[in-house]
Length: 267
Image (cartoon, rainbow, N blue to C red; front, side, top):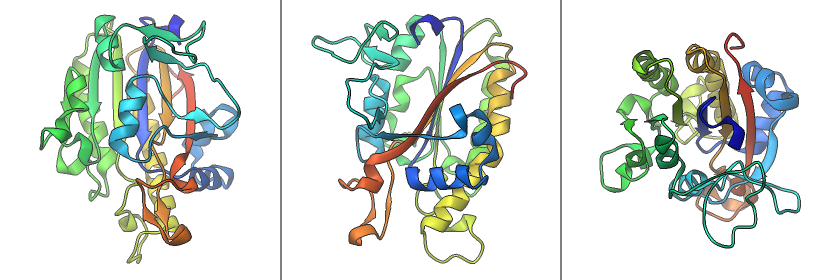
């Protein structure tokens, strides 16, 4: 990633709460065709999250601790905040002297924008302003949140406004936290009265149907875009009696991950 800074726009999308098993099943079944087209080899990579809930996971992500490959390491990271004793920053790692990625990118001339989804990005409390506060621009509204069936559409409407006014020559870092997968997600499955794996899957199908627009927005500036798409954690739907996350369960720790480059005209 080190050689891309400045020449490429950056897009980080966290599909909040997305389980690896559901994501993997859907792409194999052809139910997420947009993702199948852009994922390397048409498949998600199975990784482990550094945390079991949104706030902790994103703090780790922004410091360079993205989900970790499940095989034995150490694994070289894409980017990293410099600190003594780090063993996972290699020759291709972009190492920066800042506490977090948005701050480091601003120092490199990037315009940084956050489009929040779940409550840790809602700007309604001091806690909900911590992560958005790392960015030059940050937005949240109820239409971006977990109860809005068209939450990603609303985020993309706002992103279109941002992209339109950022000078074409200035690099852009866009971050989207997509809330659709998070409970409640029963509204994506007609007739459903509870949240379960099926409604979780239906939420991912909704997200996939909107990704073409997202990719067109970020590549429409005429610059190549390095994209990271992953989940911050999974969630339980009754496994071993558990419901939800912030627990040490396999379905929570195991997440889908991918990174790839999009070029203008490929969206």
